[in-house]
Structures are given as C-alpha cells and as structure tokens.
Image (cartoon, rainbow, N blue to C red; front, side, top):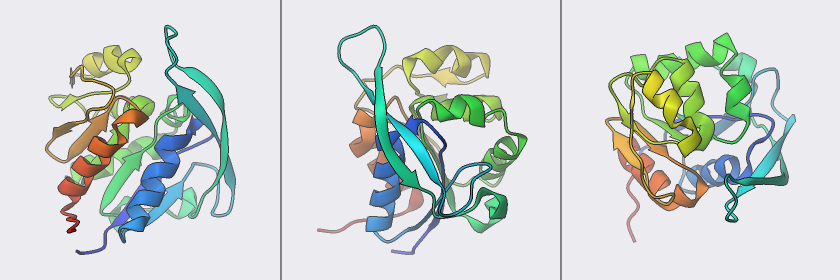
Length: 193
C-alpha cells in the first residue's frame, strides 16, 4: 500500500469522534495525517464536542476532549496532500467563512482528489460551491444547504455512507465503519487479513 498524505480540517467544537477517529485510524493503517485549524499552529489544542442521539428532536452536545493539532494551517498547501477529510460538529459553520478554507477545499475538487466529509462538514463543501451535480449525504439539518448548492441530498441511515466519484460523505459518526471503509477504497488503500 502506498502511503497517502491526508489533510484533516477541524476546529473548535468540531465533533469529537469525527475528528479523533479518522485522525487515529488513518494513521493506524500507515497514512500520514495532518490535522489543522485556521489561526492555529502545530501543538495548539482545539476543544471538541460530543454529539449524541438520545431521542430528542436534534442531537445533544457535551464537552469533548482537547485535541492537539499536529500541523499549522498557515503552512498548508493543498498541492502537498493526496486527500482531504473534513470533520463535522459546530466548527464547519464558522470555518466556511474563512476564504482560505474555501480555496483549499476547492483545490481538492479541482484536482479530483479524494474528499471525505461527515455531518456538518458538508457545510464547508456547500459554501465552496463544489457539490453542484453530486450526490451526497450530511446531517439531515444540512440537507437544505446541499440542495440550495446544487447537490442531490441522499437520505440514508445514520450508519451509512454515500460515494460519488471521489467524494465520500456520511450523516454522522455512527457511520464511521462504512464512511472510513469507503474513503479507504477511494484512496486505493487495501487491508488484507
């Protein structure tokens, strides 16, 4: 398996599992993963939030872990990476206002590189105007944004993922097994037992 260099975009109050699980899992199988947040440097911490599904009209939110970034956003160039992962949670709603985040995201689509986004991470994709003509999923509350941005929202079970070309999306962290497996397939990563 060829090692890939993957950029993980996250931020304060990103969903805890949606940041930590892909970060650790992609490293575990041998990929190099750089976790970044605008206006933060390697060694800085972000605060994460745990979103849970407990039967309320929407998810509940609890304090998560402190997550230490291992790269500096200011030093990042999309040309240096093979793929992009975008964590969900509350961070995407403000990260999408950063023009550098938008330009960086567009690079991965312009260059037809693999992109995995989960939950509210899709808000960055809609703001970057890269979902037009694509089928994707997201947290259901983001569905109107997907449609308004010209994408086709696919309603799936919270444990499922949707693949359209090199774009892999999922509604939330319960989909990690399918979402990450699909992303690995798009990356060309195979695991043999």
